[in-house]
Length: 180
Image 1 (cartoon, rainbow, N blue to C red):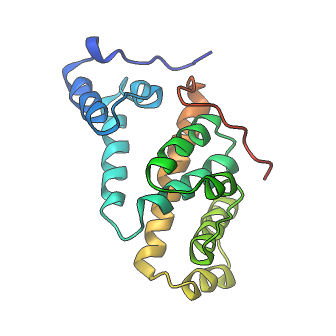
Image 2: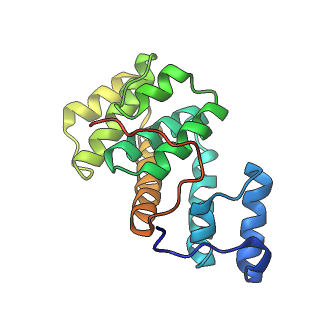
């Protein structure tokens, strides 16, 4: 049972309504996570702004979705794991890579290096080793892209924790979290 209330877009405050309408236009739906975030328009705006800023970076949408799967698996967030399977498919992630994403695996070696690095950032709380940083650089990621991987991890840890605290009702097709 949800522990944080969800906002009905039809009865939302004006500030929340503007943000929820933006989500509806972008996704065609208003997911429960964003409806719960709308209880504080500042929280929803922060999430949308951070996500939007990262979308302007050098990482592909597909890679950002795969990083989201790694984060969801590492943080046991069923909501995010289910949501990013749907969003990942929309971003062009293959079924095989969607299935492997929670284990920080991908068919493309460069993508796999980014996912392993993202998992290391989560597991070490940012205290990655020199070897882990060297590996992602050797895969061809610039320092700017490394920063974006860290940013994607931070954004997804936020949503993982938000949904875990809130027990957000999963409104995407359920997926079983991998054992990590």
